[in-house]
Amino acid sequence: MKKIRRISQNPYFIVLILFNFLFVSCNRSNDVDNFEKPEEVSGKVLFNEIVFGTSNKLNLDHVNEMNAITGTLDKKQKDLYIKTINKIDDKILEQNPKYFDEFKSDLYSKDHYRISASIEDLKTVIEKALMAIPELRDSYVLGMKIAKNVDVKVFTNEDGTLNQQAFKDYMQKEYGDKEIESLIGPTFIGVAVYIALAVSVGVAVNIGAFVFCYYYVRNNCNKMDLSNSKLKNEILVNQIYEKL
Image 1 (tube, rainbow, N blue to C red):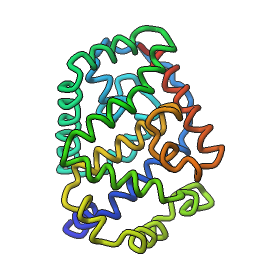
Image 2: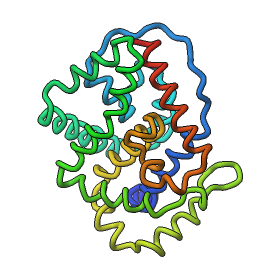
Image 3: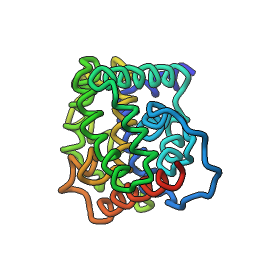
């Protein structure tokens, strides 16, 4: 148990989760399931589901993909994860008290344009909130720095999975233990939210919005990656349109 706990707190393990999110999301089916229309929920619940995967009342494909990874977190990590999501929610409300109500109105509008525009606007909303939270800002900025310099294709196996050892070796060589641990190691909170933000929004939102890999590593992403991201955005918008 102690060994498992040490591994789960290792900064390289945490960064690996981020990239595993990306690979899982790119290799899952995009089929739209038939289901019963859910009860109306609040804008905050919708926001946290779509961005952080805290629930899946709409049975959205990309949330199912996220849950395949977040399901591996232990209780302590999940508690920190939720606490930090709440912190971001509070900051968003502080910056715009009407945001969640407006978000809900857009998603329930049955208007593809409004739904798509609201999803794309997540970039501005979330980035503004994260940059206003001191304890999350540093790991967020470091994550963007790593993403800008890392070409994920270099660490991709033939079957599309991540070559974890090669990635770990690269991180140790390029950044070193001190820089990574100084921003990521001390707390799983910021990293957990950073991972969720990077991947949940990254695989679902249009290229013009906040796309983690594609936005900061655009020149290193092949056409299939970009097309896949755009396709996932269209699928998300269509699913929201059909299911609300």
